[in-house]
Amino acid sequence: MKKILLSLFVLIALSATQAFAYNLRDFSSDAKIISAMQLLEQAGEYDVFSNMKKNAIKVKFYNLSGYGSVYATNSYDSTGRRVILINSTYANAPAEQIACLIAHESMHVLRKPTLQEETIATQKEAATWMKLKKQGVSYPQNKLTKRLDNLAELQVASSGGGQNYIQTKIANSSFYKAQFGM
Image 1 (cartoon, one colour):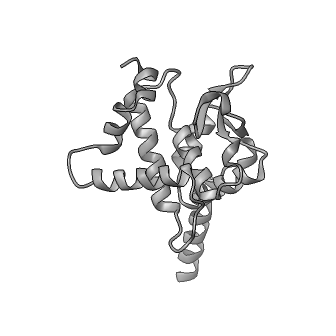
Image 2 (cartoon, helix red, strand yellow):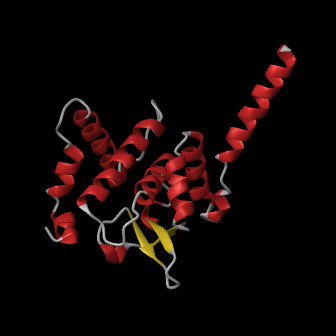
């Protein structure tokens, strides 16, 4: 009887794991991006993949120099398909950092962003960094690392009370004020 129960448990566990398995090549053909998505998958960030699958999103590196100092953006290609564009400046960034950008951009579902949606996306980015950042690893000292570390600090500071420091930072940003028409 124990063998039957154990076999049944293993079968159920394997079935549940398969239910969450995604073909990462459906989202990108870039090895570095796939590596980042594997980290998201291993971390159980299934909502990222659910959003990307639901919105038929592709992910790729792209020269975003014409967009200012943007880390990544959620856009549409010439056929109207959603695409996450990660600034090619960060193509050599650690996979953990690329995963955070993907997690953030995957949370955008509206055609025109709102303060609420940007807050949710940025909180997701911070939480993903806190989950994936490896202790004792020396990450590149660049704008992206500084951003992620700052967002993680704001996320931790926000968790203790009613103040949402990430939302406050976004609401006070001239970039987002212009984007949201505030």
